[in-house]
Image (tube, rainbow over all chains, first blue to last red; front, side, top):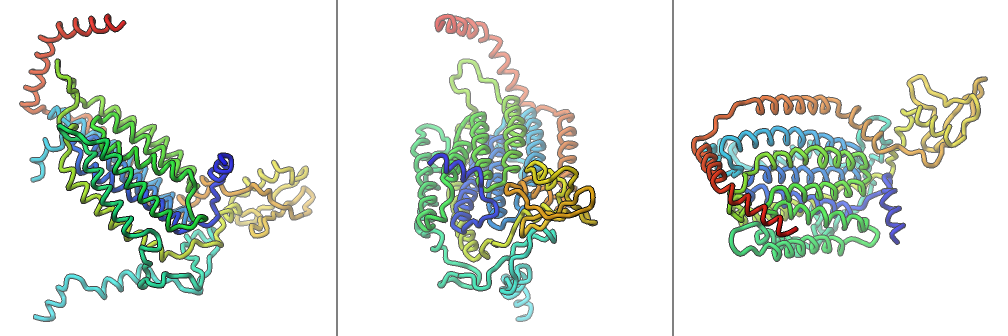
Length: 119
Length: 393
């Protein structure tokens, strides 16, 4: 039982057809993860956790892209995930540098501390 | 007057429909699955002439009912919103465990609802359920855990489970680069910043968490908004994917092997097919003399005599090779742009970190107060700590 499952996992059967309900499973996971990340971004007040939640939304988009790439047997979806990771890394570097600057100025990671910046 | 009104009509439906149809032309029944990779064109077509459509569906959309029972989907969304609103950190009585259980129930309900409509052959791998539940559970914990360090660690768990999902989708390269880049690099940066930017706990205070970590902002509104978006998103996706063209059966990623003569020759040599002095024939344009349909190759020995041999069975295009061909042949401009983005991020981080910040007056005051409190209370606290550790030993 375990052995056959491991075999199906290892082979992954790339050229074979993936059915629409299977694709729907992956899209549901992707959508749920995106929603959870969005809620986290809206509710948490810690700047670092907020950026962590945006990274989670990137992940959700990546799952949808790879699932569609598998469905259409086309590598373009996987290529896009490469760019998602690139953008996420760049965003993390910039955002965290900004967070450190903001923390040094106010001694707090609270996003509401900066609410006067909304103009 | 009327003409100006008609011009300012907010939803020119015909125009929108025309635009959509121009960008997404209806799939012609005559087009058959093309040869994948040979022409460097992504073949998303592959419609069989008489592809089935839902009987009750409008043009282009299938009923949601074919993928999941709508009441189950919306019930799961409502339940998820309720649970997540409860699970958010808040002051005072904290029903976090109940909320997490309710949200887990909602996720399980959604997956069961999807599985109920799918045939036994259409169910995903058993590993899918493991990875999906781990990924969603850990992401739930990222959002609800009051301590940022734990949230980051749970995020690593989400990354690992997502990498497992990528493996199931036969995207091996992306799975491992996700682990290396995210879990290895980005999360370490996050952890560093969390450590760097956390406030030292005040002496005598048993509460080490900052107030903005304990209390979340508008949990109910955010949960409602998030799950309304999830309901709309999944409705649209499930209605849309029902009318996707069925996955093309004629696509063979191995066709790219024609452009990899050295790999083919290596595989032939390892399989023992090539005799002494024989070589794979390479055509003038650099392609290997390989017939992928019949899986045969033409080899030539030193005297110039050619013969046809069979390719080994396990010779396939690896995921990295396919991804590399796709990346370089179809998105060369995007690679350049990604390089510019990374360069800008590097420059920006350097500029930001070299900048001198002027600290706010009240922040300075707070710092001074904390430091003086530490200096006066430090001796007593140090003794107490020493006594405590001595006692525990």
